[in-house]
Image (cartoon, rainbow, N blue to C red; front, side, top):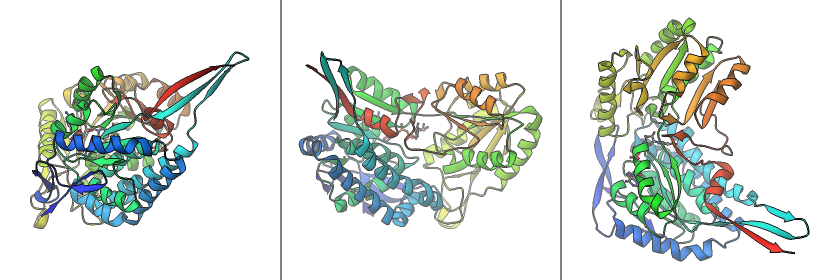
Length: 480
Ligand code: TXE
């Protein structure tokens, strides 16, 4: 049985406690590898390594830092097939999705920030003949990066790449549910010649390793992506220590579909925004509001498509819908479907676990599920499910659609379908989310600010927002 290892001070190492955690393949329900059950002692070793590496890495010329990160990016590209298969086996997502989205985006993250740092500059402010001010933007030191299981390497690299490019050293923890590609990244970092201690990856549980990173007095900055509850816990610990915090949390994203939309484009994209990655993307549109005049047509067409979407072995290239990430998460999603029924929801398709045969017999599969007949403010429409489950609701007026969309404790992304661009701009300004997609979904320019408001988090990732987060501004004022 493969035993993954931590990556500390440039070496692959056993956890000090020599304990390991079972790592499951969600498509079979079987343990297929082990990951380190590390603890605060391993985190301490990682912090010491990062601290020792920081003086030299932080003053390494930008183009040399960029060169190492570009080597990592091209090694990810070269290992596309191996990493895609590993990601699919670890997370349960279709290998076609890992191959076209997760892994290419991880390579792009390293490439984007390696080149971005070469253009990141700060300002000067002249006070006529009296003084000149200039702003320095120095790396913060040892950055703590903690990431979730839904897009493992994609989101892990989305934090690590800007942190390293800006001159920080990193202590990172991937989710214990999907450790594999972070481990494979360690090997690629060694191959790329990343200096020892610059990046340290400590595997293990959130309540042991994640909390040790959050509470460590020599980690002045935490970048976290994960559930809202966990984000609140991290903030509770880090805020009194005055740490810099970036929290990318949950979502319960509304789709507003008007009768004047480009119907075919909307229908095709809404299938994707509802069920991509088995609905385990915080940007998925899980609440679908449809103008009444096309509600019945949409319901018929959407349910017909969802019913035809077959769940299959994620390792099969033809599979579009794989397994959800764990038995615990499957049970949670099924419980949410039962809650929806108890609140008066009508399941129009799906709503059940799917049992496959052969090697996938014990896999965690759920049929794409569409539910109607629920009020906009019931628990099912307020709480994040994070699975292949969406609700559909009709609306009569723009004001009603806007009210329902904004009636949420989350505020990450909205998806708006209309050909009336005056209405589109008007609604974009009034939707309480950090991102608004109009007549598209998940169209991403990495330069744009990424993140949400309310329960969806604090701060923004992406472009120079990320470099602003991973550096500390200092104003120097010189009398002339
Ligand atoms: O989160 P968890 P999950 C959200 C998504 C969903 C959740 C899914 O909407 O709600 O994340 O990810 C570690 N101290 N987003 O269930 O449990 C844990 O080990 C420190 C939003 O994994 O919060 C894991 O590594 N760390 C996002 C990581 O936190 C702790 C995109 C996340 O785990 C910890 C992706 C603790 N006390 C998912 N407890 C967006 N907005 O972009 C756990 N962890």
